Amino acid sequence: MASFFTTGNIQTEKVYGPITELLSNDNPAKYRGTTLKEYVDYYNAKELDNTSALLHFKI
Image (tube, rainbow, N blue to C red):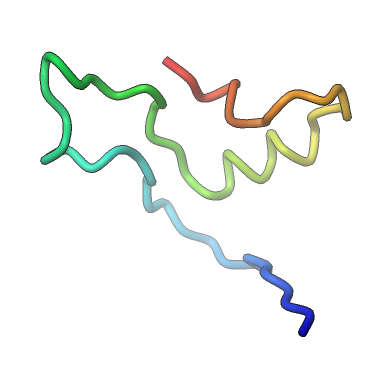
C-alpha cells in the first residue's frame, strides 16, 4: 500500500525540538528546535549531496 505525507499549505509556528523532560547536563540536546516550514524550506533548497538535511539543525 502506498502512503503519502504532505504538510500542504499548513502555516504553523509550532517549534519541534527535543523533549525537555529528557534533557539534562549528562544528556544535552543534539538538535535545535525548528519549525516545519524552516525544515521543509531548507530541505527543498538543499542540493542532493548524499548528506542528511538534519545535519543543518545539529547543535
